[in-house]
Amino acid sequence: MSVDHAFIEEMEARIPKGGVRTRFAPSPTGYMHVGNLRTALYTWLIARHNHGTFILRIEDTDQGRLVEGATDVIYRTMAECGLDHDEGPDVGGPVGPYIQSERRGLYGKYAELLVEKGAAYYCFCEKTESEEDSGDFQRGDDPCRDLSPEEVQANLAAGKPYVIRQRIPHEGTTTFHDVSFGDITVENKTLDDQVLLKRDGLPTYNFANVVDDHLMGITHVVRGSEYLASSPKYNLLYESFGWDIPTYVHCSPVMRDQHNKMSKRHGDPSYEDLKAQGYLTEAILNYVALLGWAPKGERSEQEIFSLAELVDAFDIAGISKSPAIFDIEKLTYFNATYLRAMDPAAFAKAAEPYIRESVKNPAIDTAAVAALLQARCEKLTDIPEKVDFFDTLPEYSVDFYTNKKSKTNPEVSLAMLQAAVPVLEALPEWTQDAIHDALIDLAARLEVKNATLMWPVRIAAAGRIVHGWIEQKGYGMGQVMNTLRLALVGAGKGPGMYDVTSFIGKEETLRRLRHGMELLGA
Image (tube, rainbow, N blue to C red):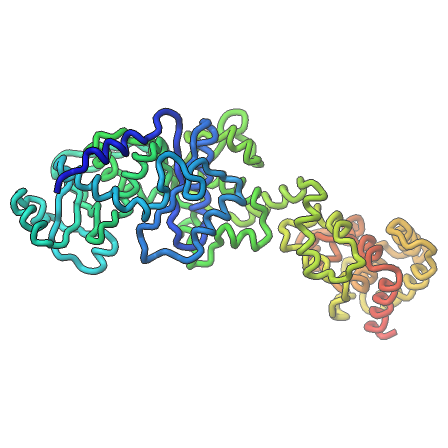
């Protein structure tokens, strides 16, 4: 077959010159896992830090693995994360199309060019279905490698099906450089003649990547370290074409523990899973950025980064070759930090649907409830269980009224509630300050510790128990008195007792206290 040199010259003339150009090239095969998000973020940061161009390319040549709706997941995730692209399927650009299946016609022309250069050959050997589907056809000495031009032409004329395979030198070595791993040298005899173009005319992943990266002017290629083994073949392709080799940035995997990579099939979360679990996009991005990268210089101790700060600080020299372990507790810490720092109005808007999962009473102001919660939750999904007692007192056991540190038992608790009800009933103003002052004064008049009075009142008002958490942390009930919110949510954080009583109102508070007295045998 003759090579269409005019077409190739035209394609080469379109390639943008000068400036940093990076690409994120996901396959639409499902969810956006954490490793994919990290790759997208790093490629975006490299482009933005260097005032370059960021490209989104959809790699859909593996038609058997495509998942309906997965492309929409990619677009939605990128938009939510603020990772805007300058060129892509939806915005166009000078080197489109940006969907690999729409570029099908050009790969064969470049494969034929390699054949002309002697760097590839037609292979007519029969292959198994799995070999054909994967493009992975390993054979030590392919008999087609040494076919004469006449034999090749005869086979083509006869209509024999074929693939085009890369001709790897049997002698010598190939060296490539990676930002993280340095120079890596392999013996060519260890490399197989990989398939470049399959029988159906579609390229293999490895070949399409090289051709597209070149034609789109990509200067920096960011991918997982699992592609290190393929990089020598990439380099040989670049050299055979006479093309400039991009800067390679191979990132070590994100691990679920010391021995296992994160995997959806093992229950590890995707980006969408983390969002559904109540994590903020900003916190997720911040944490993911630090999974394998560390800032240098004056920012070396900094952990919390806005996206703009990441753009300013990001340097590929900070990417580590060591695997990073995904620590959900660390992510939770980041998320709590971001929640605390949110504008109150923004937090109220984000929290409202979670509050309304539990608080159905329209008279309760969700913005006011949100103000109580902002400093007291780590994830948005913490909210429903922290406020589920506003509407309805949950069922609870009489055993809750027994606490050795506050010196309470059912008898003591009953006496405390019997004393508290008339005091609260007589309050002319139902405010947090008035409730607080009345109960503190009552404890003094009864000559009991504040905790002895407050424990049964808390239980009766909220139906929650936290003594396990308190004992675990080693706190005394006297300390809890100073942070009454601990006792209202069962997790050490949430609205304080005075906040709760203020929101549910005098009538409901007294009803709950009397209910507690009934449980205790009054």
